[in-house]
Amino acid sequence: MTTETPDPRLRAWAPACQAVALLLGPYAEVVLHDAVRDEVLAIWNPMDRRGPGDPSLLGELDGLDQAAPDVYGPYPKLLPDGRRLSSVSAVLRDEDGRPAAVLCVNLDRGPLEHASALLAAFAAPTAPRPEPLFEQDWTERMNDVIGGYVRAHGRPLERLGREDRLAVLRELDRAGVLAVRRAVPAIATALKVSRSTVYTLLAELRDPPGPAQP
Image 1 (cartoon, rainbow, N blue to C red):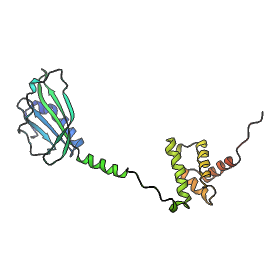
Image 2 (tube, helix red, strand yellow; image 1 turned 60 degrees about the horizontal axis):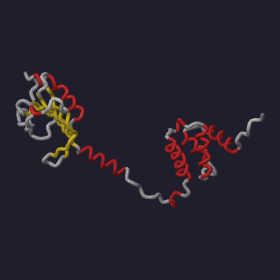
Image 3 (cartoon, helix red, strand yellow; image 1 turned 90 degrees about the vertical axis):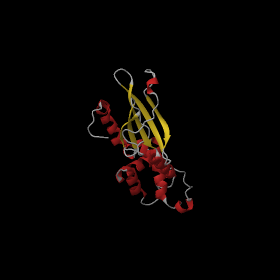
Image 4 (cartoon, helix red, strand yellow; image 1 turned 45 degrees about the horizontal axis):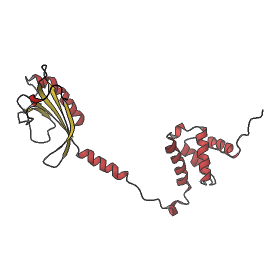
């Protein structure tokens, strides 16, 4: 593609084509086809040896109904090297409504499929935890209780209120964590509160306030 061209279609649409190519490159090929001469008008990030002036082989675009949609896809394509593409084509019409150019964006699915497979592998089900290895590890039980509460209620630690923290301490008590020496500093760190806050909540948990007197 030359930097200067008298073709008004390039002056009109090349900036948009280049913007798409810059955003999705190097994984997307952007091709502007000459719908009048049925040849490649310009190409960005080419995935094969095509260049300006090569045949487009688009077919008879004059047969397209003006009421038909001008954007097609995404539809699959395959390159000779086996790469799978997702493609979108847009018919660009002139002032009289006739097809003047066709913009095609061909996205290489390979990197996306590789990333998807990698993420799926990390998200695969894990084997059961060997409990004999962790039955004495009270910090694991503490993390399970606190992390489970956060996930179940959809609130981060910083947004847990007094009732939330009391509920967590009840669960920790049932799990035997509160019976462990030096558990309070670890709980305070895990809950992101001060030790005095934990001791205050524990006092309330052990000796809840009675009903108000009339």
